Length: 528
Image (cartoon, rainbow, N blue to C red):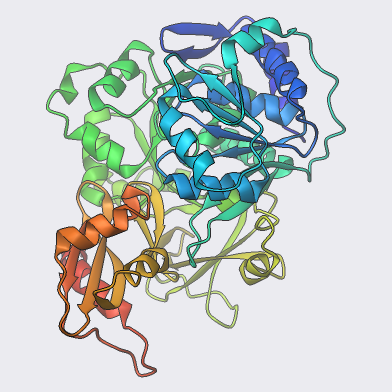
């Protein structure tokens, strides 16, 4: 199974049906097919062949989806980039991936210019979307719309694509500060899409609103699954609560996935009751922890089903869903909500176990903690140009997630901690080591530890605990500003606390768990 088959199926069965709604424009699947064909010709003219890399730096838009499908048709590899990253981080990704073409919105013109100046990249051409001026670049520039209007809309002969061929590279923050390119194959993506269709009962009546960023798999998976069943895609360029709520009513949205930060802002919007959400049948939440109180407000506000999800970039992404089993649907509402608020039972397209260090499975008693490991056709074959990292993560065919969880007798898991010191803030991954490395660059800092602490808005935020060198001084504002100069803003600490000494373990390591638990203790008391 390969990605081009998805577009062929949609065209064959739903050619005249509304496919995309974006910024006042509406396209049928036949319109979409013609535009993707034209983009294929445009990219081919820029030298993109099978295995070539096309990077995308763009807000949610029909251009994003057209790019995903055109690149896949050519047998090339798309490299979606988080536009919140710094120019230096973007430059690294462009260079490491080997991207030669960058498709970017003119909104990010200054970011693109800074990235191309920040490091050595192989970008030969930038294809611009949108209106407005942009700084002259040392590489060639082409206008997206002008380019596809000049290009034929005929279908290019498809490359000899195999299901094990790489379709996408998603870069995630590395524990050592080096971003890792997660490989996803055509088989990974197609298998996951079919699994999501089955689990969520997706059909051509569904209308999905792209609110979470499309460079992130919390949303990007729907690019494939919704198209496969002939559903409609509605694009929201950026998250603005009232705009999202209005679009949900106007477009009769039936389903979407949002990160908890977004859902929290929506349910607390002062005019949330103004709009009609009767089209909604289910809301999914994923990408970060969500408080049970927020789940209650989501269900009460939108009056639809709710599904908590858990996944990873490495698994395309879903690993669990808190969908109720049929025999549990008769439980009282409060008990049903408790189950829906769990991390969920295993996704249909994957095998999942919670294991002890010796590999045996933990007891299903919701008390014994183990690591989640998974296996299946949605699991990445590895990390781009990082064989040692791949060997660490995949053992005997099982991918070790690094997430610690308990399991109940029904097979529903609940994540209780993260084996790696990863912080999930607003749906974005932040690795503490990466931030600590920057803190240690500060001339006044002797020791540093970074932990995630609870936050009502973002789920978690980054907190730095530092020890200053004797005789040296630094303020909280100064340390935060120092980090923002070297990292994406969401990775920088939101607060800094100064200690005389950091607690240590018996082996002399900084006791980060002890530091973290101090801030989570009150939250845990409220939950229990």
